[in-house]
Amino acid sequence: MQEQFPGFVFTLAGVIDAHHHLARFTWELGQPGKEAMVVGFDVAVLTADGRIEAVHGFLDKVPSGT
Image (cartoon, rainbow, N blue to C red; front, side, top):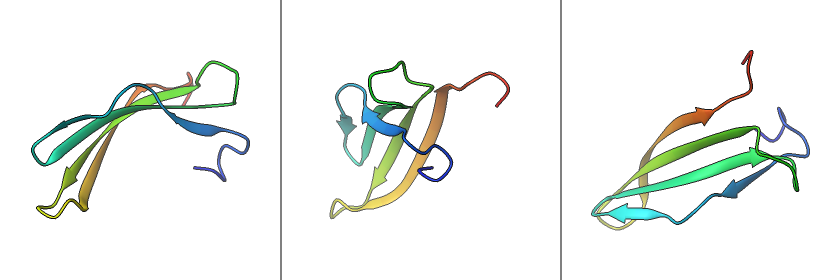
């Protein structure tokens, strides 16, 4: 992603919501100081010892034409 969008940064948008072996968090991708171009959220599935087993990503906002 960093190669595709040079100068853009990922930012955590809100708190991480966790329940049992799942964690959900919203993120934004954009240039610092500007409105985010992409917004999404990920759900991480954790193992019994707390390591990440899988991540499922969802996009809520993408630039038109993408």
